[in-house]
Image (tube, rainbow, N blue to C red; front, top):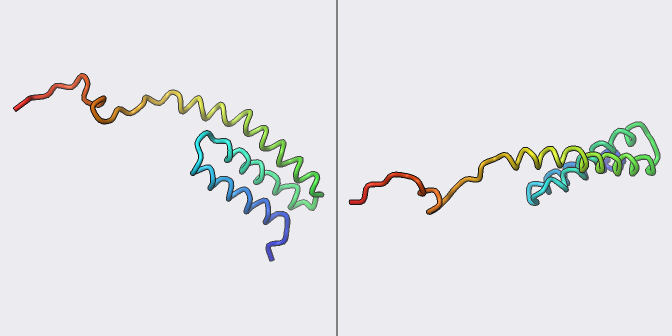
Length: 95
């Protein structure tokens, strides 16, 4: 039932995207996007060579284009202060 290459790339892509939840840096998700992109030649009946080439090109493009964009968004966030650092500059009344 799930022997089609299309299912393989779909499951691999979804598992890689889920694995990104456990890792920082948006690297594994780029490979997941490459695997999802490899579904296109698999669905069109292309050979395994073309599927792997599409996976590699899609993953490299995602690493080169999407990852820097998302890291730039993360850099603009102000870090959240916690503990004693969150109390600096605040007014308090000691009783």
